[in-house]
Length: 343
Image (cartoon, rainbow, N blue to C red):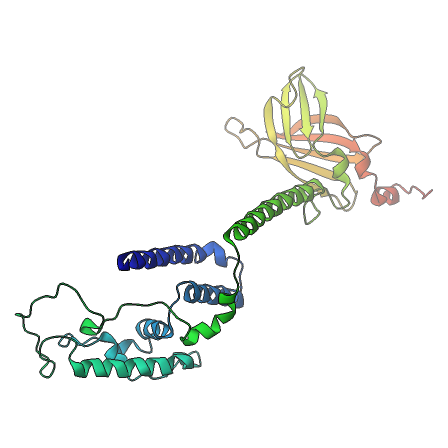
């Protein structure tokens, strides 16, 4: 039974150590400010204290071993079999460079009682051997069992109702919930989390559809929305050229399949000529020319009743120029430039 209890405690500690490892991943703190990080760590420490049922004296002992304020004094004398905690007695406060003092005040009374017990055990010679001289003879037979307190060590027992920490966690201890209900709540939480991810994906997709969160993908006035993902073809000489908004531009022999042929690049952006009001479409990063640059295409768009490609040529090696017209260029700049009166 004792072995089973100890095994359960070990497994409980393993679970909480694994939980802490999960909580301390860098992604957990991503985007958090200093106050938020502090609250995460405080929540983790509080959870460990509560679920592991650590006693107040355990908190004091842990702080004695990990805090730099106590490190120089916490050195075990190898020539004695007294408790390793005797070097930390009597309990004392230490000032921190960041302000405040450690350990917490509520641990001191418990630590003082603990230290007095250590002195009594040392006087009683619980180490074995000659308590007065401190000599432990090699001839002393090794015991077949170790009673509690042997060599100053005690079996760790969980927190009980008399411990000061029990008062702090009194409310949490009073809250009970059936495991089946907890499982249902966890399942609902997982479902809501998945639903939230789906909604966020849909929101991101909608933002892309309308031009992005910065609202610049569809142009300054959203004019590209009406022709987004459409392709326009023109024949020039023995070739035909296809320009796809938000897609790719192609050059191929006449009669070829749509969206095939030599790539002239992928959609890069639309610019607006402030003087003329013309739109300029750009495709970049196309197939590399022999001993030359990557192919690219630029289309100058003027005002027209419908969107279409008027002409295509190659003014520079592997840099193709097109003339287009579209209603999207029929804006107020075009009206003023051509002195068109308002209706």
